[in-house]
Image 1 (cartoon, rainbow, N blue to C red):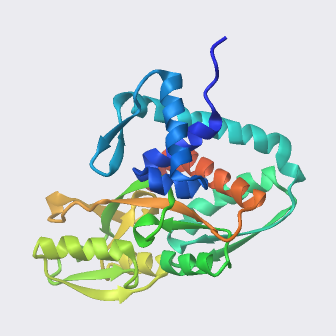
Image 2 (cartoon, rainbow, N blue to C red; image 1 turned 30 degrees about the vertical axis):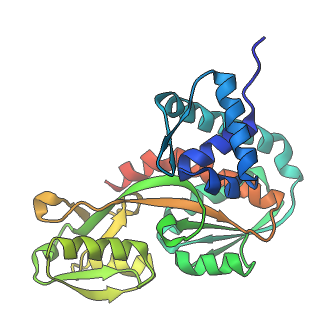
Length: 294
């Protein structure tokens, strides 16, 4: 009988694939870089195929590595779901999660429902603040986990979602034709704000900041009222919004990446369980959320 692939090796492999770095992956999986390198050497020996190709300092996947990544995510996910099914109810206590309010109304219902079913004896505390504030709470040991826009983090994070960033306006107004262009964006620390302003400046498009808020609902209200345009990820689209494209004179925006940061001061079984439910929940809901908003 052929030997099975080690689950721990697959978890490390996924971390390397998502960060592009053995060093960053080592921090995420709490191993030394030499241990990570040895794990990947053994994984390649087990598969008898190279799965990484060096590209300068980055570690990119080969074609075989790309094929393995799809299976690795499914295997790890099923393994965690099986463990949660049999071990989940025994966990009790509390766990603290930070979420930007941009994501809260979209992602939290699915995350909380699945986590509560698996761990009915656990108290979940949720704090909604911008990514930069959540990172400060992580550093001060006030949170166990934080969902963040990874561009806001100058540290390793577990990227679990990538979405197109889109220009949006009201479908009942012609706000996008005004000069200078009125904008409703997040506060100065917002990564999406920087992306939007940089694109407009490169395109020499006159603009003015009309509304600034860290609250996603307030920004969306300004857009839907026809007072300003803004930028949102695909999953943040709301009824009444229209996506603006290069055909409307708006440059394409880069993708935004959403990731998970763990408390470096202490790791708990509850935090690990919640982290896996977050990743599993968002992977399952991505297509449905985008289609529902269209």
